[in-house]
Length: 253
Ligand code: IPE
Ligand code: IPE
Ligand code: MG
Image 1: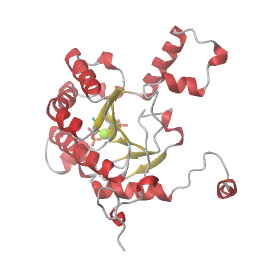
Image 2: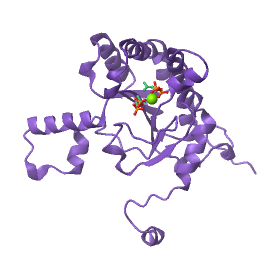
Image 3: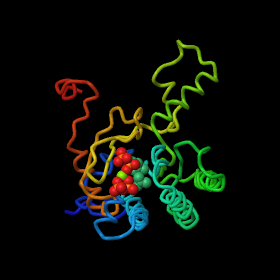
């Protein structure tokens, strides 16, 4: 007998039953430059292909039952890249908003931004704010875009606001700090994926990722397709999330 899910897919086509899929997946989309080099193309083309890939992965996330996708698109450290590349990465985000916003909206995607808006050119800031506002009531998938984002920078901003709000020292706890982060009303990521073989976090969700499962693959981001995402979800399904407890405690609960 073939079990069908609500959208008509055979259950066997899903890497995990939807109710066991990670609720929040975060991806460090790395390797665009090396992908381009391996194909004898300019880095620009790697970023373009990487953007195309995001469209595909968004669809796969919906299909697999992921509810929140956070993507690392531009880090606070990426300002150190050559000026022309920085400008291009800015233009890519602008282009995505201009061209894809309506389709994302039609597909029920709620766009959010995490990171420091004030460092970004005013016109792009306005577009980001508009995209978030325009899609704010959508519920199919939250696409959380980390752009001009750095985990340390986020904590510095949170501390400044806590001080500005004159929060008494005895009221400061983990829940309060979480509320002051860019991700305040989002749950922590269950799974953080990094493409391109690097084994580091590069200042991504350093507070929120404290207990996330980590998955890395040598595949460059433009080649990270649905089957690669499926493999990451299968690996996630095999993990035992202990949150500090023993196996015996988990087995008893
Ligand atoms: C990821 O690809 C995209 C951004 C960091 C904006 P890279 O541009 O870092 O690609 P590699 O790591 O040089 O291959
Ligand atoms: C992390 O990738 C940032 C993004 C994917 C946006 P980088 O390519 O900038 O990271 P490092 O410099 O190799 O650590
Ligand atoms: Mg890189």
